[in-house]
Length: 317
Length: 292
Image (cartoon, rainbow over all chains, first blue to last red):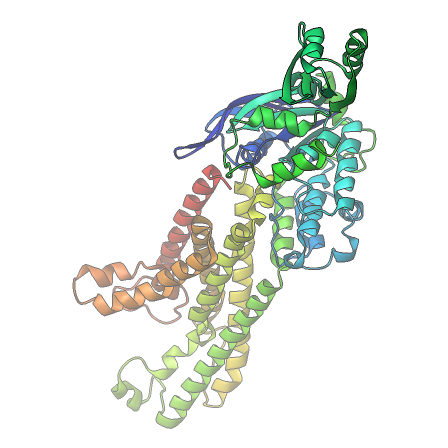
């Protein structure tokens, strides 16, 4: 369980995190979503005491992180893939971390096996690929078998197999009753992993709700309708919660009515309809809508990774 | 909070049974693993010993040469004419001949050990595991001090063993029973231990390997040279120069009589210890507050 209240962090003039409060519950995967520079990493660093909050506080399992007798047993964090001395081997790194808490060599070997580091464990970390570094970071996070697991952008640099593995790992940890807090700027990833979403933009919380609610709440059903009598059909449909626009001649975009309702209305009036396409509402769409005004580093149009992700799953269906 | 309680003991927690948590001894062990598992550390320590012993052997050979060629016994009339210091008066300090280079290498090592943690990001792992931070820094300082003591005193003792036969060839004797010899050997270690803490504090404050090494070596080596050049400009300069870390450290290993106005072994040791302590405390306070 992570409880942040009135948490703020300022670096000079720049406010990275602005008075945010949230709770991350055990037993589920909570996604921490936001564009680059939104304050995700800063917030996570404050949770484990690496950054000192300018104001407010954050508790982990009821206490500030540093007050715990065995911090690594409370929280395991992957904050930055580069938190390892490059000249030391992965095995020795984990051994040194484990030694601080009297964690056995057996557990060190366990996390090495669990994260698939076996073949490279005795090699210097400096030569690791991004993906291997990420796996080592995750191994360090799991070392203390912690009640709360924090993973900052865990799928960065992982191959598809690794992405799937992280997804299963996060779900598995949550299923064991642990608190899992996962950050990402990739919606598609969150849609498949998280139960609950905390969306952050420009240091402020924009949304904090179950993932289904965010999708449902932000967007109503939209259906593309191709018909010879768009005006007539619109008249038949328009009512409370239903609206529509004629996008081009003979093409309607109807919001708030299920395809079946539209078809029934058309049948009643004997209007010919020759296309009914439900528009899939993706988490990307919901997210884009939520953070529209909160993107810190806006590129000319949209951040490329967002556009790419949006194209892939938003228009793909 | 029932939810929190359930999460405390997940059914499949293989490692959470033992009463494991942080303790200073465990942090020491962790720091020991960290120091010994970076190959360059071990190599640098070996080089330190070799260089220190080599310099002492050279000093012994040089002294033996001078005494053989010109004579140098304190009692001999030639020596009295040549004026101080007579060559053989330096004999008791020969085991400590490598001290300057030892300081250079140990100071560099101490800076590297801590600053590289910032350079590589390792410090975030370190302070995640030991969020109170100070125990981790103290453990690292304690270990580097102990290692430097052992390396310094060990190198001086090996130097002593190596120097004995070389000096013997000129009929000079060097024995642990001689006045100040044993103390000088041990204090070579003490001096390096204090220099190590001094340098590690600089590395901690600057968080940068190159900057830390340059600063530490600047203070230890370059500053005394600069002071020596300008010491005639004002009366207080030579007075103050005695309190520079390296000058104070050098007094630690003196075996003969103390020159007029110079610090005694104990005073030199205390001055250097004060330098180390002040910087160490500053580095602890700053690190405790800093974001990493």
